[in-house]
Image (cartoon, each protein chain N blue to C red):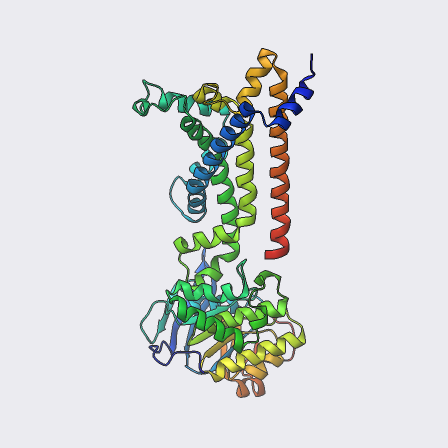
Amino acid sequence: MESPFATAFRLIAAGDAALMQIIGLSLSVTLSAVLIACLLGLPLGAGLALARFPGRSGVIVLFNAFMGLPPVVAGLAVYLLLSRAGPLGDWALLFTPTAMVIAQTVLILPIVVSLTRSVVEDLWAEYREQLRSLGASRLRAMPTLLWDGRASLLTGVLAGFGRASAEVGAVLIVGGNIAGHTRTMTTTITLETNRGNLGLAVALGIVLMALTLTLNAVAWGAGQWSREKLG
Amino acid sequence: MSAPDSRQRPILPLRLSNMGYSVGGTRLLSGITLDIQAGRRLVVMGANGAGKSLFLRLCHGLIDPTEGARDWASGDVRPEHQAMVFQRPVLLRRSVAANLAYPLRLRGMDRTARHEMVRRTLDRFGLAALSDRPARLLSGGEQQRLALARAWAMQPQILFLDEPTSALDPSATRTIEDMIESFSHDGITIVMTTHDLGQARRLGQDVVFLHRGKMIEQAPAEAFFARPTTAEARAFLAGDLIW
């Protein structure tokens, strides 16, 4: 019998259709979740950094705590929302890629919000008087601070991407691991390992590792680049 | 070409009446009564902690006085046509030209006018060759030059400068002093703090001397340097440490 590694390399080298479909779905789900989390989280984090309102500390602690939200719990919460009997049951989203995007957005959003708040808050301490002097209101300062913090923020967004692409629990619960429909790299690894079908599992493991390595290289490179080019 | 637009409504003189600032029951500045007249160069002097920076921040409107009043001739609470250069100016993480354009965009200046103003400012202050460089990577002297240029581009009637050359070498200091003088020739009123007595003599037309949060002297520069009336100012000018 062929070793799992030999099978894995054969599958990758041949660009096996099932393998490619799984990788494609994983990436599209996670990238969509990252995009949505950024669209919501960047302004939310900047707002949280600059706004002063009662209960602000509570909100900050909540977002910080949610950074460590176990993926299965996030998955369960989204499951309850989307299940037939749930409040959003009529949308019939359970066991679709959309449900997986929602669950991963829930996982990434706290990371993006908390990191953005911390980056923007630090910048604000430095920029506050200067921006006010130049005529910027608090509201107008937000996009300026987000843009000036872009290098640090990118690191956080990549961390969010890493968390989402590595997790199993949430997508397994709300996606259902349906072949050809909602099967991602991580859920497939879980399933195929249980079945003793190690070749595909190892192939996906290699792809995931390569992805993680690439992401970290990109993050590191971006940090270096911004220090050199932007100061 | 003068920086303040002649169509602007005059905001000066700035009248300070018994202006003071306290925080948590501690009086950091008190009893400042002074008219800042258009077209003059006023130097604010005093030892560390005398309240010089606080004085500038109150005038510029970054903070509001807790006592007394700060009244602009135009009646505005915080008029637009004023600018401040900080001791350590913050430049944005973008190009030199984009730093100049930023405050103009905040004011709603349209694209064409903005480009024109940025180009004019770059040319005037010899920054054209640095136009596309990231502002944060300029040398200390170049950064300060850009900070002053950015203030100029805002067409202020009055410019506040907080120790504008404290971190610079003599040649960069000279450049900045020349810029300040040229602003003054353009009709921009200058209010600046400095530790450097030579600089105060070179640039000051009027002097205000602060001591422990109080204004204890106010005189034309010539009179102040020749005949300081208080013991504190005499000691300061003689280079003694006073607290």
